[in-house]
Image (cartoon, rainbow, N blue to C red; front, side):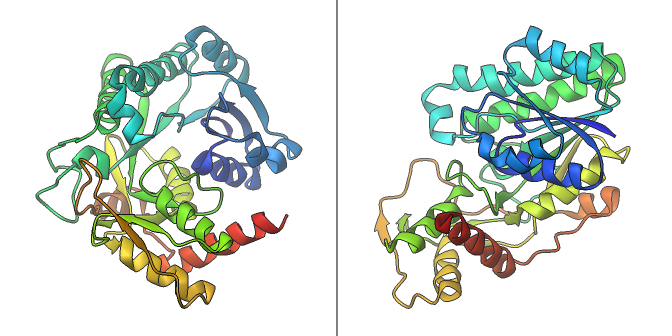
Length: 314
């Protein structure tokens, strides 16, 4: 398969690129390197991946890359994911998450791409959900511009499917964590806590630490993408664990795994608009993709911590 990955130098994207190359696919990466890192692609480029440094808001250049690469599928992961920045400047957030997605879809339509797998967000779209774990039928109630823009982008996938028959599916992730994780976004708390352990600092928790999220390991997310691209499923599909983990639990497990008895948190006032609970129902992923999370939170945290420590030793 010929695959194009937008945001392929980022945390999730680079892990997906590695998996695609490992199974023998030809891979083209599009990333503006604003948050992604070329270092994440060192091995991938050596293995034959091609990197194009460009912004998905540049429709003309993006279309030219898609035309030249002639991918069978596009995995669309490029996005603005900083929730606080989205609230401060929602119009800018929308130019990337909505406008950029439209550019990807338009290029895919014009150049005969067979399948688009779109990366979206679960918790930020459902907001203060009435049902936990939340199914895809939960009424979207975003509480930040980031969630609203990702929901709007999903709508354009449906539009292109109705207008042009463009095959697509959206994967709504829980809080993804793992090696190469950037401390941006809510799941970035794990990367931050690993950094605290490595440097002997105490972590800071905003609020009482009882707030929960559905933390899903990046390897499981990559697996969901590989299943989604060969399926005929459409619409949104949750990718999580259907299990809630509190921030206090993260601190406790990480300290135990690192053998640090006094890894305790400092507390700061809660941040405006932060959800108390978030958890995704993954029944649709099980039914349509044959996907289930394979990595427990404890095993995932261990692998993430080991990777973090290995990086610091380099």
